Image (cartoon, rainbow over all chains, first blue to last red; front, top):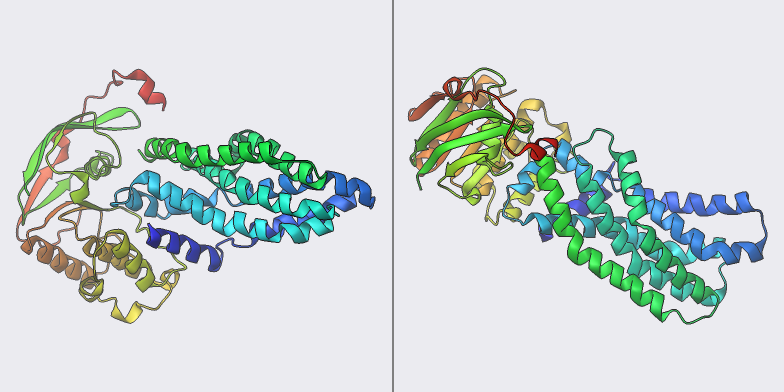
Length: 218
Length: 205
């Protein structure tokens, strides 16, 4: 398991691995928003939590189709499935690797991007906390979508269509935590619901992903 | 450790391709599958490796004893040869990659990124993975594709060594590897008279 995680991280940072792709995309979206809505700082500050969450979600989506497709194409997915590692474990490790290379950098960079969006000063902690707790769910749900579309040529678009609706609950509660934080309201209950979504996804979806992957490999 | 396959039926895309395939392979023996393209050699091998379920029939050994090598090698081009092999040895929990490196003459290539290897060298790396798995039954699908004559001879000796150590091998190949203890199975006799499966929904999955 550790070896698989190490391999996936190593592949991500080597040439063509796509590390930093999501982060750059996140940056570009956030930079574009003020051009679109105009330089009104009050308005930007108000929409900042929602915009940051939508941008993080799209950035996560960008690298999802690589999760299994690359291993499928070069045959290593077949070999991993026949290895002693349980398939559910393989999927969890791949989702964790995706989170470490996509989700975690987003969490770390969010305060800087929030500055670009003129987020009120007391909202930073809630934003980072909501992303930290919410982005693992994005990776795990994404792994399910990637497993569903693994055998399909150019399945990336289909993957987005399948996965984005599944992201809605995470987005609602994540953005709600960030919004309440920015408005200095208590945000415990949406935060707990967000954590619930993350843990439920982490506990249940690897089983479902393993089942669809087995069907797809036949 | 004998592999017995009893009345195995395998399907591709929901349609049965081979019916009632039965054979047994003893430790130290190799079985060569023969038959024209499309007869179902790959399907049979994937079923034996546990990648797809059989329609019916029994296989005496568990999937944990099988090491599968397909048409594609499962090589990561941005990792070096050594990193590729070490990864599989960690996954399969085996101690060393040295015998595999030696047997397939990969020592000079160890620190090269796998993307820079030629097709034949990649193939050798892919087959070296079999030795790293430490599993008893090798399931080989066209293992000699893109190997030159020297490498084919090399690979023949590796299989002989594996068989001499009590291992088994099942291979689909059109080339004579010069194996001394090889059985041959003509799959043409088992061709399924195709009809839709009973489990009709399954065909749409």
